[in-house]
Amino acid sequence: MPENRFQPPKGMRDIYPEEMAARQAIFSKIREIMKLYSFREVEPTKIEHFETLAAKSGEEIEKEIYTFEDKAGRKLGLRFDLTVGMARMVASSAYPLPVRWFCIADMFRYEAPQKGRYRAFWQWDAEIFGSSSIFADAECIALGCDAMSAFDIEFEVRMSNRKLVEGIMRVVGIPKNKILDAFRCVDKLQKIGKENVLIEMEKRGIDPEKGEKVLDALKISGTYKDVEESVKSLNNSDDPLIPEALKEMCMLDKALKFFGVDKHCTFDLSIVRGLDYYTGIVFEGYATNRKVLGSALFGGGRYDGLVGRYGKDVPAVGLAGGVERLMEVLKAEGKLPSVTTAPDYFVAFVTPELMDVCASIASKLRKRGMAAEMELMDRSLSKQLKRASRIGAKKVIIVGPKELEKDKVKVRDMESGEEVLVEVNNL
Image 1 (cartoon, rainbow, N blue to C red):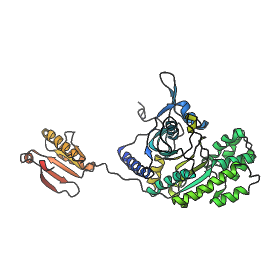
Image 2: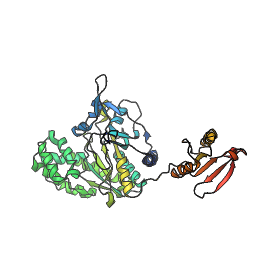
Image 3: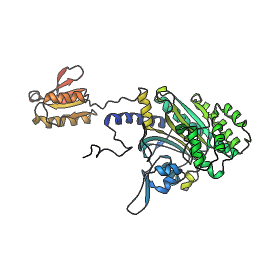
Image 4: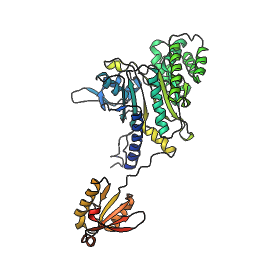
């Protein structure tokens, strides 16, 4: 029998108690931040109709969707992000706008597994539906900043505007029907480098010289003033999308100052985000610590056309962060939450005949809100004490026949080793 016969499929993994405890601590902190921003928690279904998932997600994502047919022959898929599901929920509901929802849940993508990235993974996600105000964009960026600050992570946020990049592409001469292809290629810039992006563009029918001009323009970064001056210096930069985008970026720059997070933020035109549904401001948050340099912690942007695909045309903006990536960064920085799962008490017996008394004591402790584990393996007292030590129990209650004759039990403090007799009724 092969050794790995009963291992999880490639890209999937089990989560054991220690990691699960750390995850729950992370989830709790994220929920605290969401509460401060008045977001309400929801969860879209894990299984969607394929056409729901494929709506404006892009051909690359379509290839990564886990698809299958149900018994009625309908083509279904597992969710690959939370934005699509929440957008569909908003479109099919009558909640007053703006809707402020968040979710912490698992997703599935059929892509090459790598460190900190799996085919089944978790994200935290927050979305604002119904507002076209630049303050909604700024608030999402501020939320991401506050979340990273809550975990004491050194980070920066790089921002751009898809309208500006599209305007530049049009000025350069990228055909209208190749704009989305160009975006998909540019999104891979940090992963595969300039030369490979140009090769990808050529494969998609984009002239290499025009592709080169686009990539040269996307080197623009810095403050808003830096970007504005650099963009205006480009030849023929009079495409109508360009001034519109610059105006939005100027307003965003000012709004971020009001939220007090501008010190973390810089503009970088190479940030375009890979999903086709983005329409305006986009951003990504990165760890800046040398140990984890370049690790994307969260990303998002405006996607005003997506909800309309499901029947209700409302503007929207949001962000999402990967839980596994966050944990990798926290671990590298020595900041991963260390959460004890140890019980307050371990209830041991001297003879197995006293197991019923142990059960009564354990039940009494639990009703008082104390975590208690009782012996279930019929082991000797010495082995029970070893078990209590191994699981980190703070105290051990030893139920013995002599003590029970006086309605008492021994209580041992596992740190000091001190033992005292306590009346059963006083536990």
